[in-house]
Amino acid sequence: MKRRFFVSCSVYALAHQFGMKGAIADVRRQLDAPSPMSLPFVRTIARLRMLDVEMQLHVDGGATYIGMARSRAFHEAHKSGLPWISLDDDIEVTTDCAAAMVDVLDDEVVPRVVLVPYLTRDEEDARLTITLPIVRTERVRNGAKLLLMPKGTGGGFGMVGMNRLAIEAVQQFAPPDLTWFDMGEKKLAIFYERLEDGLWYGEDTSFFKYRVPPEVTVEALLTGAVTHGGIPLKLDGL
Image (cartoon, rainbow, N blue to C red; front, side, top):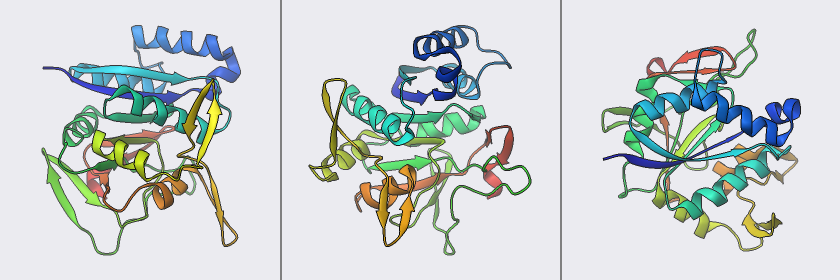
């Protein structure tokens, strides 16, 4: 039996090159015939398909503001009734990492957010996009190694998965005034950036710090490998 997921990606850079419609058409062309020349996230999606995963795909070519693109994707994921995998266009993961993500989201007992750590694009000073906790709590779920993140923390949103319980919990936890009108619909601005005590929190930090309720588990996936902008990272070595 195929497992079904809502999978989203924003292709702003491609849209800047080809226009919004042209970018989406180019992604469809790449998805029809994935190759080593395809965008990294296309190669990740190809690996998910090899795992017999059925996807409802959402490609946003119209948002110049990443927080808006991610909020749109969350809105559509919530409407889909499916678990959600969010991908950045420059993220590629190995097949074992993709399989682990699918397996750990196959859980409707615990509301779970799972993120894949990766390195920043600075080749001379690449930094990990999560802060490893001093006291580590690890577990194995369906064969995948997971590292529990402290409450209020997360990491970069290059590849993140949420099961349905987590999506519903985030939806219900959001304050009612955290909304905007977009394409004729009222949507939650789940990834709206926040200023507090002179600090500017980006869309991913704002999400994990302020929008994830305490009952939702946030874990880092430490299985397989990931490449971000050409910079590889072995996850099981963290």
